[in-house]
Image 1 (cartoon, one colour):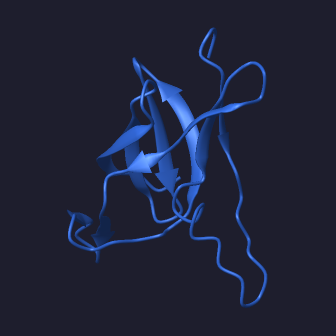
Image 2: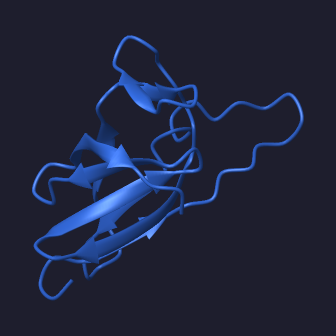
Image 3: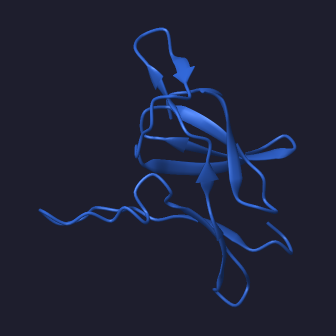
Length: 102
């Protein structure tokens, strides 16, 4: 990402009995060239449910993000479950954009 920094997905595997609520479900960060965090992803609340893959905004989740990529004119992050979000690089907010098993 020329001039914007580096998108990073941190794998978060807490030890037995340890919870990292500050990162679980928000593992994507944008860092500047000096390795300082610009933002941590702020995904829209919700998750897909069942075989229909309907996105339910009333169903909170801390499902981990596992992948980030650039396609066409946007940047995306997907959760382990396949829920995919389009990222606003200026703010870190992310809106559900569909389901794609990655």
